[in-house]
Amino acid sequence: MRVELVTIGDELLLGDTVNGNAAWIGRRLAEHGLEVTRSVVVGDELDVIIEAVTEALARADAVITTGGLGPTYDDLTRDALAKAAGAALVRDPGLERRLRERVAAAGRELQPMALRMADVPDGAGILVNSAGSAAGLRVELEGGAVYALPGVPFEMRTMIDEVVLPELAGEHRVARRTLRTALLWESVVATRLAPVEAMDGIKLAYLPDSPEVRIRISATGPDVEARLAEAERQARELLGDAVYGTGEETLDRVVHGLLAERSATVAAAESLTGGLIGAELTRMPGSSATFAGGIVAYATALKEQLLGVPADLLEAHGAVHPDVAAAMAVGVRERLGATYGVAVTGVAGPDAQDGRPVGTIFVGVASPGGEPRVASPSLPVSGTSPENRAVIRRMTVAHALEQLRRVILGLGTGPAQKE
Image 1 (cartoon, rainbow, N blue to C red):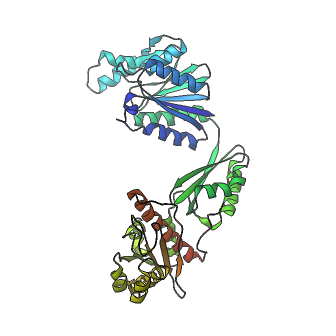
Image 2 (cartoon, rainbow, N blue to C red; image 1 turned 30 degrees about the vertical axis):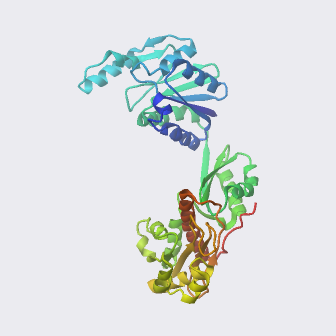
Image 3 (cartoon, rainbow, N blue to C red; image 1 turned 180 degrees about the horizontal axis):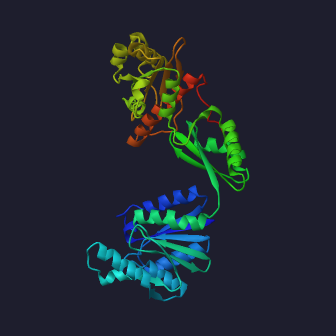
């Protein structure tokens, strides 16, 4: 089932209203195995609405429109659908009676203009709007059906769930699972998962949000649960330990869970991130059980004073050095009495530091009974814009949490980005 969306309203084109309806409908239909192949926005013009709907039906099995069903003269969806169908607009007695009853119950006087909401193209199906006044319409045109819904978000969502989805989705079954990976580029993930893409009844969607990529696996057809389980098994095998969680699990929650299982704690020493690691590790309720605290040693001198980084090391190499990251991790672990210490130092920009280019970061993790581990990941950013600085800092937080996860689990420093 291929569906196209046509959202209607000058306010959407002019930016006065954000088009959240299209995003919500797309997600909702996808959850039920319906493929949204195109989404367009048009203004309140009769011929433009007709053109958008008829062109959409030439490609899709069904079209959903939102907006233009209100009582004012710029609400033209019902007029456009009537003209497209070659039908007259007729007053529906049931809709008129419902409008009068709603207005009377609210203690208001019915305005004649409001009765426009009782006019429907002759022969159209009426879609009940249990959340508002404007009924929806189902109009059969050449090529398929048009489902016209109000633009008010709450009303539209109610009608999608109560009316449209039961008709369009029917008995079609779809099962989904989302895997979460950290620190792999989207192209690398897609390349590795090519065999899964080729499986019958399986569709993958890649949802990048630097520095992670979520992979949504959808299975359709008979035995969807078995298909999904096999696709997930193969995906995990191909991605290896880059998969850190599923569904709504975030990296900070996974780390807290691993620490809690071991009755362990972590402390953070931060330079370029300026407290962002601590903020991430305290986002989850109950995080005080596993996060001991942090030290933001932004100035070079404070790395010696607060964390015990050797002065000769700082003098010889500056603050951005792998040995400095290691010493910071050891220092914060010892000073705050935590099981693990995680530390970051680097160059967020806009200028180079200690001979190191922007984007250089070192992540140190100290654990009980072993030498500290240091990773120096390559960040796919360059330049000196403020946006890049924010990206570098955000990615550094993710690298710190991922390296901590890997140390806790006894994994290597991370998968290669090579495709």
